[in-house]
Image (cartoon, chains in turn orange, green):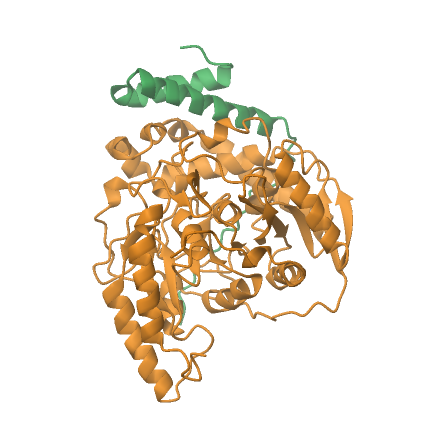
Length: 448
Length: 67
């Protein structure tokens, strides 16, 4: 519609800016609304399209970005943290630059958990913008750390948003807010200009309404960047059709410690998927996946934030438990290297197990959204997160899509984890599921 | 302050030596929880056998200036 002139980028941008301004604060979803920059980009896009210069599917389309992505022009990049609330950069993160070059329009920097949760938060109230409320029920949490990104897509404040994941930060808000979230393979999307939490685990991804949208956005943000040496290849979205039988698997014990409603919706989703896929149960070797992943994050974040931690400014963070990130500062180097040596073993073992499959399937999270005023870790203290630990440790892509609701009318999600650079396969499975179901077409109440 | 094991106790001693001026009772309790989680991870990792040939999963590349 934008290409044919039926929709105006300027009108579209005004529409979403108004929604961001009106509804964003209601959910604590916004860090900064970039009205001036957005309208300037929208006018430019409109003129280009009028002249017949059409850059592609994102030309003239508004978006939001998690506030850990650097933006130039005096727009703050707060990292969700009070001590950084006035931080500005004189450059744009590569993903922002790529999207703007494609004609997309940055409308807002979106709220996030302070320092992407890297200081060990245990509660939703861990951002200087306040706890991010879930549009499905404002007494529940949005998930994090890409909190504002999940909320803004769910509430129709932006058509799509950028988020990031080190361990769970895209899949968690996608699950809680009932949207589609894509965590790309490590090394597919440039991290340049993103707050570093863990150099070997951080990934930039997307939150959208559909799997198809995630594929489209990914094609624009992926690819080589001279400022990020970890990027090894580009991505071409194949917009797949479903004319083949998929091969899926789930890990033995995948539902141990998982909420009853989440389990029920997972089995129902498998029944749908059985129409288009074979589904096997597989058993990952017993390894300390979470311990390895946690050790790497702890040490890399300790190094990335050493100056900040040593300055004592952690005491200015919002969540009290984030005031004391000192334990990670004394982990011996040998333990980090042990974790990195074990990481290689894990990568090979998991690859051997999953290479025969298009995706490994699991609930996106053990539970739906938790109360906004409760410590979320205390609600399921003993359950494991093998999928999250393995997927992030091995740098594997995953997509989370809505697959139903709990008895309290909160969305639940199902995730498809792929092989390295297997984004087209997992998007194909997710897209197939979304063609047979309408969970992604449900929207929260009271959005106007 | 008691920890669950000697690994955690050793780590806690190091934190106290380095950051004692920042640690009120609440801070000390948070750090104790933190070192215990780290110690559990360390012990779990040490239970997994490594061979001499198991290198860290990172590749060092000498820097070559691009043309």
